[in-house]
Image 1 (spheres, rainbow, N blue to C red):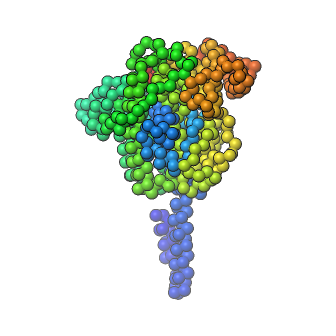
Image 2 (cartoon, rainbow, N blue to C red):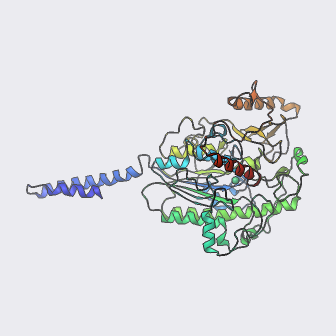
Image 3 (cartoon, rainbow, N blue to C red):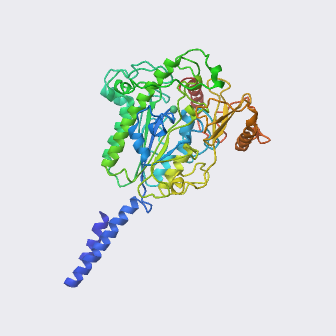
Amino acid sequence: MEFIEKPFLTFKKIEKPITVRKLILISFTVFVFFGCASENNQTSVQPEQNQPNIILIMTDQHRADALGYAGNSTVITPNFDRLAADGVHFENGYSSVPSCTPARAALLTGQAPWNNGMLGYGRVAREYEFQMPQMLRDLGYYTFGIGKMHWFPQKALHGFHGTLVDASGRIESEGFISDYRNWFKLNAPGQDPDKLGIGWNEHRAGVYPLDEELHPTVWTGQTAVELIGNYDLDAPLFLKISFARPHSPYDPPQRYLDMYENTEIPAPPVGEWAERFADFPETPNAAFGDFGADHAINSRRHYYGLVTQIDDQIGEIVSMLKQKGMYENSLIIFTSDHGDMLGDHHHWRKTYAYEGSAAVPFLMKWPENFSGDLNRGQTLSNPVELRDILPTFLDAAGSEVPDAMDGASLLSLVKDPQADWRPWIDLEHNTTYIEENYWSGLTDGEMKYIWFFPNGEEQLFNLAEDPQELHNLAGLEEYQGELELWRHRLGDHLSERGEGFAKNGVPVIREESKTYSPNYPQIEMTPQERLRYWVEEITESFLYH
Ligand SMILES: [Ca+2]
């Protein structure tokens, strides 16, 4: 409004009589001035690059292959499929450290595991040099997060203007109650949000026993729809929508389960190398074991039901973006923090190098005004990772990507799909569940090489010919050349960490598993805080993966 008032004040100072000609001239000048002013005003909020809205949609524990557009003809995901048709599907999308918190650290910072400091399941640090919401906020965005963050403290903002959090039942910060749980109390007085009685690391399944509207998936989706519907700022919007499902408990409302009633779901694949994982103590949240095909198929049926329930919410979110005229100028990325083995190779949960665990959904819909050589609806096979998402957002927002950021902008692949891109991506996880599950690996989407630190065991899979990883080629004579090539590539990758990780160009056997690298941000704490921190962390490492 200041812009409008000032010229009128100037106007009053004109003392000479105003001729018609002059009036026309002045009117024209004012018109031009006003026109420019309003345009300038607009570009000061939406700078030269015409910053797009940025919508990050993520799910938790979502396998890359549990989506229709990824070639799965069993799972029902029409809305995700439409989104893929409007953008690009990265068929080799990975989570380098496939468990909750390290994946979220990569997403937050745009950095590789060694550089963001998380090599396994620990705590996302309170502050980093690079933080997605803060960097976008600094670029003029209004930044808001809805759903699961899995940060510490649980209400940490990392630069968000605001968050509405769903943390399932996790209480890791003193006195914490999630926004979802508070909302639940208001909408279902006296009811138990955990009524089903299945924990969040179990692989049993059941039907959601409460009104469907109370389900966390509906809360997250509808909260996002409401925020978009109410969005009225000139600033571009960065919205993170983070679903806590299809992570267990596998608890879809009945009608979503009904959609799979007559669907034949195959038993999980079990490689010849995996037989030794069949026989493990049968606890409800066991990370290994053959629980029988019926158990595995039943879990997967419910899991698919959860995915379809999320898909419905995606439909409503996209529909609201369109209704508000925000869809075309939105950059949308959909991914997950890691996958879910769901009984593949007698493995459950995550933290493994295998596809069910480390491969994640990865699609991007780029904004209308961003043109390149790539047509919409394509699939790219470049290996991409969660660390690439922040650089993509910075690029879209018109900012340089800092050199110390390891990820690269995915928009460069839209501009030119033949552009230089990393040939393979690194994978790893510190010791989890059993001693031997401490490993590092590489994949280019065609081959996958895994080195197990405790004993130097190796696995080599030809993903192009054997996408289910049924055959470990590491012991075969004809693959020794290939094996050596990948072993040296991993040795090169690990060499920056010193001889404790790689020597003479190849990885070494290690006894000590590290959760944090020396680059993990140092946190100032009182001795009491430190004690509490470590006690909580040890408890968590047993309970909350
Ligand atoms: Ca997770």
